[in-house]
Length: 495
Image 1 (cartoon, helix red, strand yellow):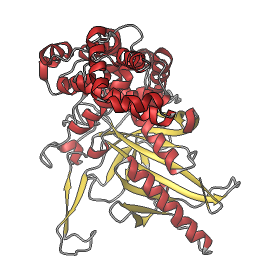
Image 2 (cartoon, one colour):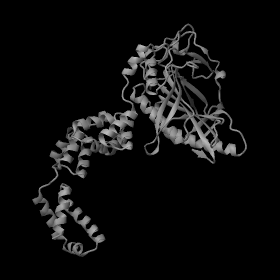
Image 3 (tube, helix red, strand yellow):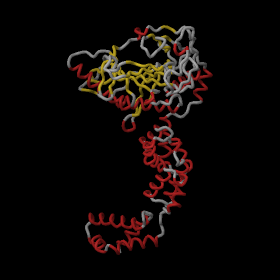
Image 4 (tube, one colour):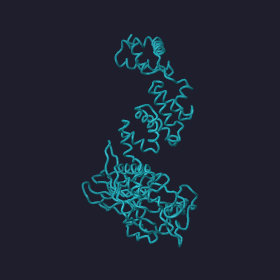
């Protein structure tokens, strides 16, 4: 993306909380939503005499991410102390990794417009402990964000975090959004995180700078924080690109700083000056030995890797003949592709496209409206396969099938479309004798319109034919086979 001749350069830091049972260096539960400061112990509070013990499961999850992102995994990596004095870290330092991370030099293919994709480099992925959560409360107009005071919950302090840092390869807010969406799908598919941005288990910081179009020299960057959705990420980057362009065009210099995204105001504002690595006074963590994953361990992780989203999409597109967009919806919505594949397996041969149409249309709309998960629907994958079969064999028209689907999703008929059809008497009528009688009854009731149709111009004929078809379907209470009715109506109108 260019802004008034300036090229946008973006790099992202994605902070992914790992879905382990316990924290990174102690046995406290790793669970969201508990009462504040109830999941704490001497280790995660940094009390004197306590010692950290590394969580093996967190390392395994980091190795999974390394495999998924095509990273190099060194034979040895080490932890450092990152020193800073914010109240959300009770030790006044964070155990993190600095110049020898567990994963580095990887890449992720990010989908672009019209089926294109671009490789975005991954600089590093390092393990660290998460910080606590600070809440600014009170409305008396105090000095901290307009609040009276701040409260700190240390339940999150010590939760295992993997920070995935991209290279500055992203070139637009939309590409940045697509990168995070693709990465989120990968992390969810390999089972290392629930990636819930609304709960903070996936957080994104963005570094953005501008440079003259065609230049290879990077500009001065600003870091943006507090973006809790993909929409916020794109909006914040759009705003910051415009802001920096205005600064540069005024003859001033962009200041390297950390900026806060205000979602309500739709703008960024200065938070603090941007720290450099020397500000944190990194030094090796003396209480932890180097991390040395064995070749056998890495091979076990590699062998257990599930299918990744990009490969999953390609397989569904090839097997079912569906579009990139539809395959992306299936794979990108938790549990939806599994549901669809189970329905196709249970359904008639070649039902992939029909199942996809139902799942990405009416079924997905129901999921969004209710917040339900696919696995919890009253309509099982086998029930959807049954619905597809009823349409394919002519028992149901598409409009009647939509009615049956709605009833099944509401739990009617035990979620069985066939049972609902039987209870409501909705089976489609294909008997030609009954359908001819309905056609003749409608035409006999509208002789003037029939005369106009037979002697009219093509435009009038098309409108009148639609009128007749609507009347016949009403006569049949929506149960007439439309293919047969169309043929019989044309034959009867032709005299």
